[in-house]
Image 1 (cartoon, helix red, strand yellow):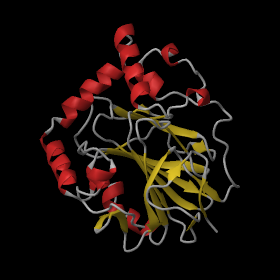
Image 2: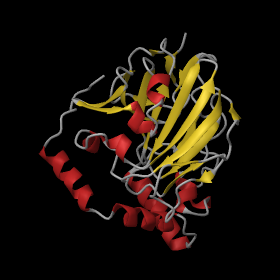
Image 3: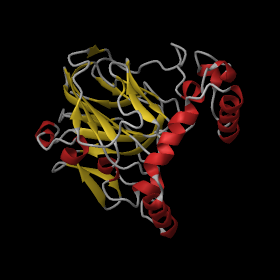
Image 4: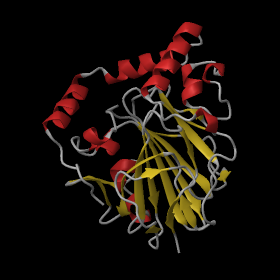
Length: 293
């Protein structure tokens, strides 16, 4: 699917060029340190700044509603929700949104390709850092969901599944907002990311947690922080911790320590996305996203 405003303009290209020149790793390392500081003045100042910038943040949904009860800005940013805040739609064959966010693209995987923005594609093999994966997901479905700074930043399982692989893939740290997606080819296959693959009763499932500018780290519930600064870069590496773990539908998988994007791949060729989905659709964790037959 493509939506309005998918073509890059001059301002988008200028923003992309600026990011090429920025010290991305240094900026993200700095944010990692600041976000974890327990110094009261800094911690409270950062939290107040976010609450002023994003008045749509609803702390009534949080397990801890007092923003200043969190020991660090990162703890506030990745806060848990109340258990009843995000009920799961449908039944076990229904794929639910794994996050709160905005749908960037969704559709059918054709010729091993996924749509990034109008006229721009990237491949399953490049995204997953595994060319053999192309066959596993051929003809299946995909959804790319952007998490803004005001969104809930924990990632949950869209289906029940057993963890079969985790890979850390080094890369750039471009912003993953709409302007950058319209401008930088292969954005999600170029940025640093963590690939989590699962076996489910409905076919293979991949969850790709894509890093971005200022994303201090990506964390999973079974392996902890996978890419904490300065342990970044180098070669693709497989992570053996947690292999074989069974996750229930809706169970927490991990979290972004700052905002980013999740790309969801479904190997089931009978995947049918819910009616009314289009680029720009606001999604909530647990909302019906697709159904597999």
